[in-house]
Amino acid sequence: MSKPTDRPVAAVFMVEPGHYEWPAILLAASLRAFATDDIRLYAYCRETLIDQLHPRTLGFFEANDVVLRPIAPRFEVTYPQGNKLYACADPRPEDVTMLFDTDMFMLQPARLSETIVPGCVSGRPTGSWMWGTTPQDWAPAYASVGLDLPRNRMSRPDGTFTCPSISAGFVAYDDPEFGAIWRDVALVIENKRLARGIYPTLDQISLPVAVELVGLRLNMIDVKWNKAGKITAQAIRNVVSYHYQKAETLLQLPVKWLADRLLVAFSDFENVEDLLDFYDREAARPAAVIHNEGWKAAILAEQQKADDVTHAQAIGLHKPKG
Image (cartoon, rainbow, N blue to C red; front, top):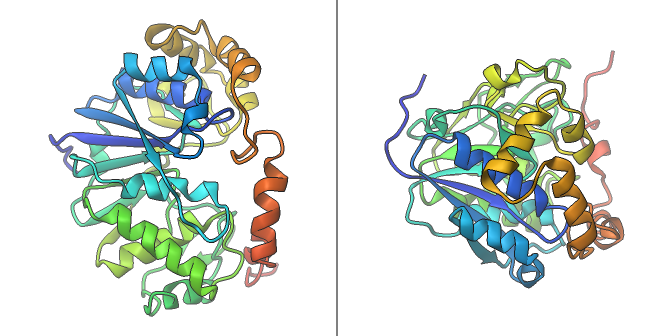
C-alpha cells in the first residue's frame, strides 16, 4: 500500500449545462465531506457552454470553494467524452491530480492520495466492454506515437488477455506534466487514424499509451476507488467512490440516503429527487452535452461518420471465441 501524500490534491471533474450539472453538485459535496486530504476542487466546462451553467450551480461552487475554469477542446471530431483530458492538461498549482468522472460520489472518508505511487498513474483495470481485447488490437494505438507494444499483459474475467489499461473514470497521478501529455497522445491517435473504433473510448485508449511514452507505469488499484454495478448497504464501509452513471441507478441505491444527507449538508437541495427535479425544469440543455436532448444527432452521428468501425465492432475484432 502506498503512503498518502501531504501535498495538496487537485480533484478535477467536468460540469456542463443540463445532464452534467446536478452530478457535479453531488460529487463536490461528497468530496467536501469525505476527502481527508488537503483537497482543492476544480470544475471544468467548455468555454462555449460555460455561460449556460445555472446560477444555482455557480452559487454552490462559490459556497464550497469549487474553482470553475473554461477549456477549449480541439479534437478533430466532436468528442465531449474527451473533455476531461483538457481539464487534466490545464496548469494548476498542485502537483497531485485526481480525475473523477462527474457521475460518481464518495461514500466514506478516505485519503485519496493513498492511490498515489511516485512514477505511476493509478486507476482500476478496465472491464470487458473496453476497447483492445488482444495485444494485436493495441498495436496501432502504440504505433501512432512510434512505440512498440509493451511486454506487460493483463487478464479479464471474460477470458481476454491483452495489454494493460485502466478506467479513465478515476485517474490519479503526481506528475504535473502528465495531463498535457495524455491529451496530446489522444490527439495524435485521433489524427493518425491507425487505431479504429476509437470513439467513445479514445480517452482510455490514449491513457496507457501516454504512460508508456513518458516512461511512467500503470498502477492497478482496487475497484473500491471506482466501483460500478450492484452494491449493498455495506458499501459505505467497503467502497470509497461509487460510479452510478445514471440517475435511475442513483435513485434505487441502498445508500441513496447518503446522497440525500450530503446534499442537505453542503447544498440547498433537500434530497436527490429535489436536485433532479430542479435541473430537469430549470437547466439549459444544449445538444452538445451528452445525454441532453438531441445529443445523439449532434455527437454520435459525427463520431460514426469519422470512424466507420463502431466501438461494439472494435471490441469484437479479435475477441476469443467459445
